[in-house]
Image (cartoon, rainbow, N blue to C red; front, side):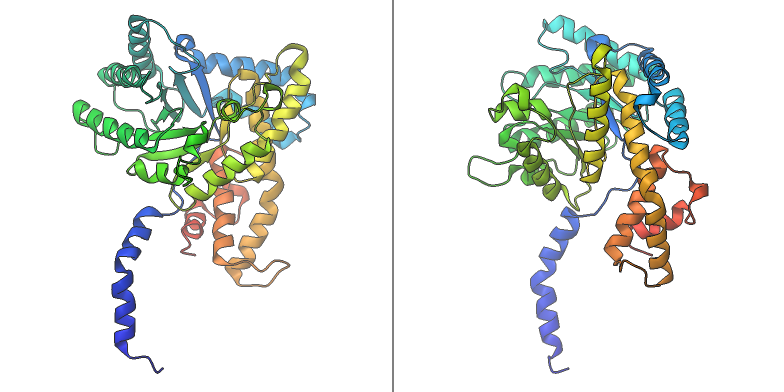
Length: 395
């Protein structure tokens, strides 16, 4: 070694601030379960038995048309059990597009009623509301709805675990900063712990991808949230329409959609912010059920293969295909994932030479399969604690 110690010291000194910034901005994959979908329900339709009713409708169509799914007996039983016990993983009560513009007193009453119903009903591991955007025309209404909803919710119980709200139609990064400030003020007003209120940002405008000066605003959105952004959700139809894509060609697999989602993926990587794909508006009802189911199965699988482990569902009949596609994805790949992770753990050479980052990805894949019900811990040679060590790159 010919370099003196002061060279090392100088490198550390010059990069100390950068090291701190990188550590703060890129904490890595957020631990814990991510829902496989978010179900959006207009606030006017939200009621005490909504989750149970969705489960019953989904089960009925699942039993009547199971042959269209093409799944094996194992996946069939898992989907059936899921629809019986947890048909909705993440429920979002919608006060935006699904609710529309109504007189203030009507929305006030709906916000209070929804908060009270959620507090006394629950029923899903993740929940929240989508309020109106922070653009000038709807900003005050959106804040008021969130305030009224939280008041009714917290008057009837604690903040539910997995609670998150949705900020739609971002057209300027500053809207995200102000939303974070509003949530902070609401925490103070309602005596909540700092950071208890988190939000996901819907990426459904061109401005939320590329700013006026040509910079990538989606990366700045993550930072502007001051640690409160839990996810980026792609909005299929608003985004497509904003780009001038004809209605007949708007879809989750349009090249413009893939470009936006690719940039979302890069912006969120390593930040702990999760990703969700959008929805398909082709509902599996009546004579359209076979073709709509086939498309939904394909699109859910496509999203999973591209690293989007969550999506939107808008109708009870989409639940069987959501879970069938998701469970098939994990069950088809888990044997190979186990084999590769076992070989990595034993430091033995196989047909694939894996590195720590790949071992981490394999462990995260298996953990996702466990969390959603596609896999059972008993059929894996690794227990959850060991998988979590590999997921943190400690194995």
